[in-house]
Length: 242
Image (cartoon, rainbow, N blue to C red; front, side, top):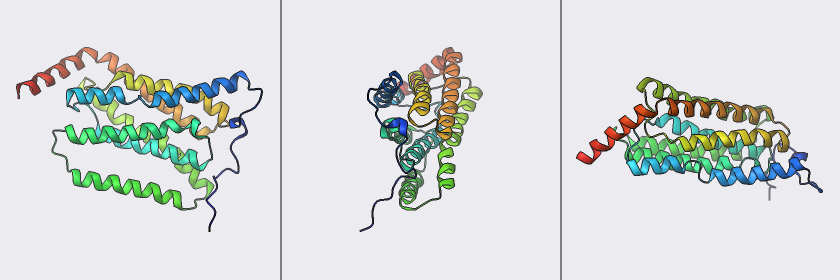
């Protein structure tokens, strides 16, 4: 029988292999890995709870959620192909599941008359593409190019939401806690990329760019706090009157 495909790298980067005695940086890196993985389990829950309680997705961009979810899946694929330890990228897998959970909630609570048949078909096609990429041998240059996709997708995911917030003058049901946790995770990952992943420039660019975009969204949430409260309160009263 054919042997399973080996990761693109011949072995796990030397810095990811536990050393004894472990240095302070090694211990800190492992603690950050554990902390980020645990934090990722709840990173989207503030947003999920806010949507669930309000039963509303007002002020939330569907396109942003779709692109963000694909970006996290791309991160998982690239990191697995490069042979990096799960602890250094596992949060992407956990958050991607939460992203698609939020997407399903958006489809359920949206009042815009969405065509769900087309959306579920598109979701199925994306899943098939992911499986196909795992089965096909790709040149290292192509793998590196795909590794850059998350940075571009996170930019595409956040910019529509940032522009929407600016145009409507409020941030709707966006949860500040979610973006704060994501920003903290990006800052922590910058350290682990340098320490455990040999300073992989592709992963580094992803976390730096994502962190900056999360910071912009947090600043918008703070700036439009009063206007957002007025809009959300009005939307709640409207639902109660129905």
